[in-house]
Length: 290
Image 1 (tube, one colour):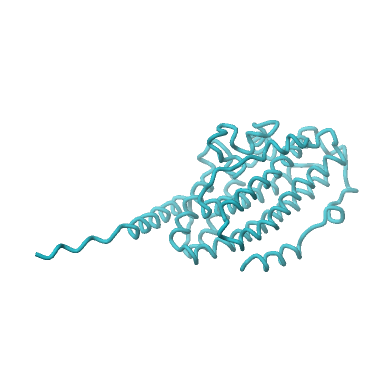
Image 2 (tube, rainbow, N blue to C red):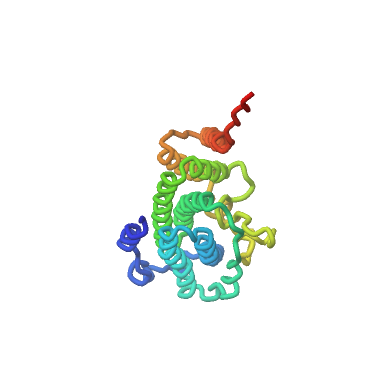
């Protein structure tokens, strides 16, 4: 099992909200109104770890190891929401999300292939690590800068944990896992060619609720994410390139094959998909004896 070791590793580096966040360094003159508003939106977004965990547990009933790891992931992700809300409670209490605003992002996700979901969230952790690093640079108030730096490190560790389960999946499922990981990897590394930010919280996950079936669509300001990325933290092509590089690097390590571009990964996806299809074809029947 992977969970016991991951628990020890993550427990050893877990930060304490009271001791490890420099609350006394707060400088009100360095917190703008638009910056404070983005903290609220991120606090609500992080609360969506709740429905994501419910999805993971539902779709991985046959995997107690991974499901047990969800106890750690869920705790740490909800802690992200909590520390952002604590920041607002201390310094901008008028912006603390209401329970109704938080509950709005708790809705059921449609069932999806577990391997694809695993890869999707691995890529999501990579992307969020880079978003939060950029957010720490954009903010000017010292405490929220420290918080975003702390959250970014957590997201990187979570990505490493998901990677452990992806390696295990390759051993268990072979080409099926390779095809699933390559399929989602191509999608998540192609953000430059899409109109929306490619992160699990911005993807449609419940057909019956469309178009309000993304986490971002259920925020008080559904257009917030694009504004935050494009106009505020300015997550530009250089930063997007860093995300793509990390996805391709990790896919290269997983598949033991170098991918220098999304196009190369897509060609690999087609190869594995074709191999799966060929293996699934029934053998030709022998000709009947005369």
